[in-house]
Image 1 (cartoon, rainbow, N blue to C red):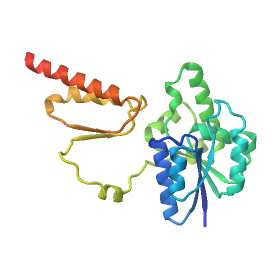
Image 2 (image 1 turned 90 degrees about the vertical axis):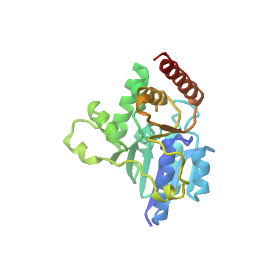
Image 3 (image 1 turned 180 degrees about the horizontal axis):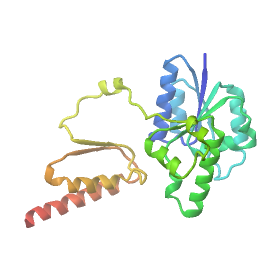
Image 4 (image 1 turned 30 degrees about the vertical axis):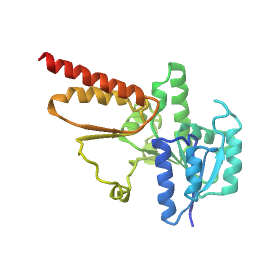
Length: 252
């Protein structure tokens, strides 16, 4: 039975963790032995246990530059002895560039869940770019979840200029299980557009409010599903935009 180990540092609720847990469940249903290493006592860790994965907890966030993470990872990986290690995100991926994990006997797949270094201050942006280059070089295969991330990798030469680098990467979109949709009650009323995601600066949910304001004359409707630190701000922004549009219509 093939054994696939998934490693994701941030086990908090969100798109990346959800995608990893879904992938674990799918592989498990296909007969793969599936294990997971993620932040100790996180949502991802607890959900992994509920899915009956071989879940192991590790403190990835003890400090920003914790040099002991690779050694602790090496110990856990030695215990699990996987055939393939699938790493998600740079926080976990960079640990595999260390001497302790560079000679890992298992093949290493690295999935990019967005290039977040682009929105950092200049010094951190440079470090993030360098880290992504190191991870891409270390990995046997790099997976992108969108063509946009692939284009960023090409533009910033993250994969390098070697022609062979194109053969070690692919784009695989995050999927949705159709059975999950069948089990969901039909919503009424119907909406023209739906946003489902965290209310986070990375998602820029306020931009959708601006779009809807421009489409107001066309009677386009939007349903926003999600929560997060920006939820109250987005609700207030939407209410303000609605009031402004109403006042404009009265003036006309």
